[in-house]
Image (tube, rainbow, N blue to C red):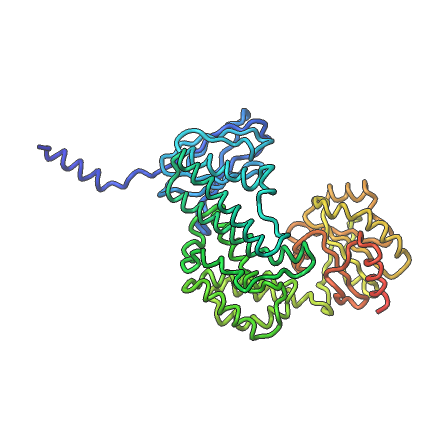
Length: 473
């Protein structure tokens, strides 16, 4: 029989909180660049946690992840490289890799190694390895052939998961998440097929009436539970699916300005997702955000319906702000004003160029396509010397010293060109709704936007014709 003191001690132990569950990740990185830190990120949204550890001079690190309640997706970062991990309470995982061939040779040992070796091998085999691109279905076929290819690729991934799990015990939750991710990847490839085919084949694909029936194989009726709960690549797959769902709503790629179109889109989404308002809100918001650049009139027509259905005030506010910004740069609208310093340290405003046609180039020395266009820019400028055309180059994201060195070394300056730099914190590119680099604009003599999609310098005759047409106005 236990003594009274032993009984009391046992009762106290039961009342005390359990010690926090932890997991440890350690490792050795061969040939890794020095001067950086290992970073781990896990959790969701406002509760997302960040951990850091300095890599030793010999390439070693150790990080302890506290307060793990269950198996958790974790993102590993070092020197612009990334790996998806999965850690459970009590895991003690060791990572080894040769940094120049990061994805190919990453390996794990210790408790919890099986799950992480599966993730690494799956990514190499199906995403980053030399045979991955050839194995993935390519949208250059008919819709029926695309479905067959996508089905085969999905089955190959499922088979790999099953065979790996048979040889190496994997957590049941990880297996469920992987199966969902495989199915989401399969669905994303099929959702993106119409737009990808249109881009590659330069014609509309022929879609059978039953083409989108594959969505019935996904758990869309309970999709809200997947939003933001899995972290890492799992959450990315969910968000990518909701973004790609726009192709289900609008397979032609052209959003109609008919106000009756939006209620039909909502009816379709509600039929697919059922009682999952968060998923519908996210999918519809992504759809209209995606269409802002190419179909602003269609978004404006759909906006009242969006507001009446949407339950996410933050998303509604974001869309409203972006619509306002798009309206500010419509063709015929006054181009957004700016004042920046040129390479000689002098202030230059857009207003200073009134009376001239402005060929505006948003670029950066860090942008390979931008640099590739510069020789053609030099030749284009020569053709308009002495005419009322100002070639304005706004560098975005460059430090001044590097910018100045590139301008001098490459001889980009000329009498009819103006080189400006948008420093960190300056929002000129945002006000012009620049989403990619390089981006070219034509602004008329009156300061109004002629086009925000002007031909590139390398387009040659088309660019010359566009500038001449602007001069003639």
